Each structure stands twice: as structure tokens, then as C-alpha cells.
Image 1 (cartoon, rainbow, N blue to C red):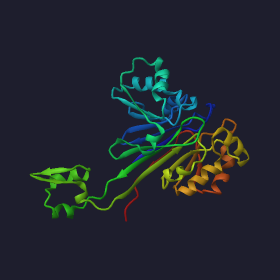
Image 2: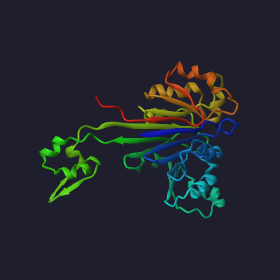
Image 3: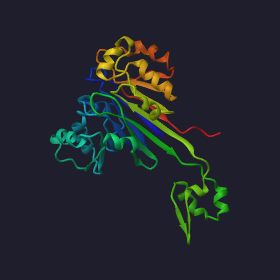
Image 4: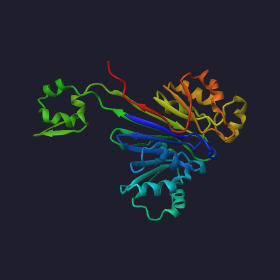
Length: 308
């Protein structure tokens, strides 16, 4: 139902075997990208999922390793034949950053729509980007304004045919009610809730890079099916350096995952000095066993749980 790909796992600068951190989510053929550092389009090309159907690009913040891949990517999306509008979402400064970066892309064949969100708005905002698929933001703690993101895919309640029969709703209207639409029959209006069962658990992906641990982050990522979090440094001996730079070490990401009750943690955004992050995996798994060290183009498919 949701395909996730961690396009790159590097922080600060790309390395020969590690692209900068970016996340791609695919839903029903459409795509959402979070962050777009230098070289993002190269690892995207290697992945092979295509460019044309990237509908939304979200930015956590505007440090170079998260944004400088944007102009080239937009040109490639245009060359792929896209003509539909493309939406960019990010913290304050989005318009200025995009205008500056896109001086070299003056004639794109599609409109760019900007959703610039301040910190107060981010705490309440929930943007529907496809039917049932929502984006939420949370201000976190970095050297500049920075957002964590959650993607939530709602699951429609189960359609109950017996309820529809009791209400004498003709069968030809059932499909519309199943798809979440309200129908009008003669002078009566029927909503999906009238013929549905209890609310069902959907899917949730959480993404946080470039931040210290913050208390409200636990509630924000709670019960996520997948939590992708920065681990700038692997060794707890580097915690003071992490505090200074407003980043996290592996153990801090693992603590967040355990406290929030997520199902799985992927570590990413490694320092260039952390050449072998796998050597420190036990630091995280001793706290949260369901931890993986991220690798470029690591993928996962998430599906709704089978009902008993």
C-alpha cells in the first residue's frame, strides 16, 4: 500500500558510496519526496521509480545538504513530461530559498505551488495530499527552524452490506459509499458512516533528521509503523558533539523509538566521519531491538494488517 525508499543516508556531504539523506514514499503510483540534497536525482535514477509522478517535495529545513539537489531534480521532472502542478512544503523561508535555487530553472513546464508553514501553524496543520493520505509537521530543535514529518494513510472502516440493506440503499450506490462518498437518493442523504463498521488502524511513517531529542516528538511519532531518524554519530562518546551541533547519537534515536512504541527504526543522516555505522548498531539494538542501519535505496513495503 505504501512503498518507502531511503534514497540516501549521508549528512553534510555526499560520499562515493553514500548520497545525502532523502526519503521517497510511493502511494498508488504517486510520490512524495522529503528533502532533496545534492545528488538526489542520481540515486532516484538508480532506484528506477521514475520522476514524473513526484507530486510533493517537503523540506525539513534549509541547510545545503537538504535542499541543493532541487534545481536539477525539477529540470529532470520537467524533462520527464510533467505538466501538472508540483507542491513544495517547508518551514518559513521556503519562497526565498526556492526562488534563489530556481534562478537556473526559469522555464519549467509545470507550476510550482508553495506551502510555507510557520512553527505555530505546523503544530496544528494536517495536509491531505491524496485521498486518505495526510502530511503532518512538528517543529524540532536544530540550529535553524526544522520540521519532523509524519505521513498517515487512513484506512476506511469496513463496509457493512447488512447496514446498507436495512436502509434500503440500492446496490448501485454501494461502491460510492465504500469509497467514502456521500450519496443522495431521492430526498435522502446517506453518508459512509451510516453503512460502516468501526475505525480501522491505518499506516504511519515518521521522519526526523537534524534535531536533538524533544519531548513532544515521542507523541508525534507514537505507534509509527516505521520511524526514520538521524543518527549523526554512533558512539555515545560523541554525545557532547551531537549536542553542540544539534544532532543525535544512535542511542538517543533508539530511546525515542522505544518510548514511542514504533514498530521499526531506521537510522540515517550519518556523519562523513562515521564510515562504518554498522559497527555501532548494538548501541541502538540494546535499547530498541527493531533497529536497522540505513543504507542508500533501502526499501520497504507497508500494507494494512490482515483482519481476523
